[in-house]
Image 1 (cartoon, rainbow, N blue to C red):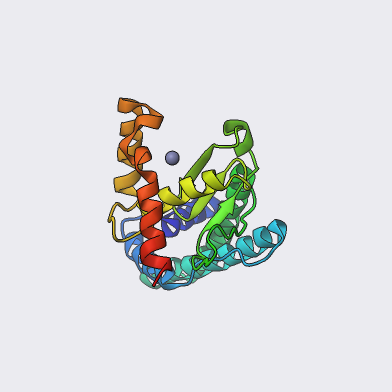
Image 2 (spheres, rainbow, N blue to C red; image 1 turned 135 degrees about the horizontal axis):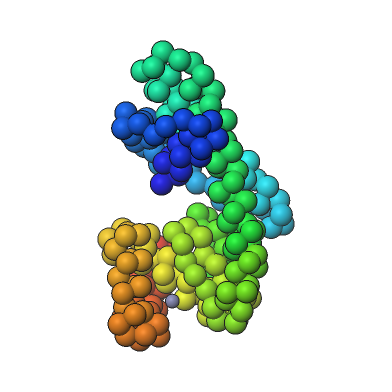
Length: 215
Ligand SMILES: [Zn+2]
């Protein structure tokens, strides 16, 4: 949860201690952040998307940190926590974007459907990821971020999109925690390719096409 990270980064930067009361601020700013629109990779140049995302996330972080810091400032009657929260949140948002870019490459848009209605997905390729996932078919899904070794490999884009549906489509109700833990367990138990969540991946992909695109 980014609101928690912002708070931890702020404490690390300014030498503050994490207090139980801070949870109220974190929950408030997390609720606030959840209501804001997500960043979309709407530019054609990956670098422009990367810069725009970094700016967007540092603004979000500043907003979130201002809420958390503001509540702490009010309870301790010290305005410095508000400014520290704002600066720490901005730095944290910027750092998280930069880290994603370095590890998984810059965010891009890919129209893998003829009628692409899903703008929230950030396709990534390159970065340090290319050392861990060198083959064309390799990929990794992290929430809204779809990493593929080769952005021109349609099969691989569709496969990762299937995982995106498993994690994010309310119809399946997996959510992140009920997806990542089971799939890791299945990898260990059955092997990566024999994992049930990998076997029927096309069903998820086709569910999305049927219920989200053809209406
Ligand atoms: Zn897979």
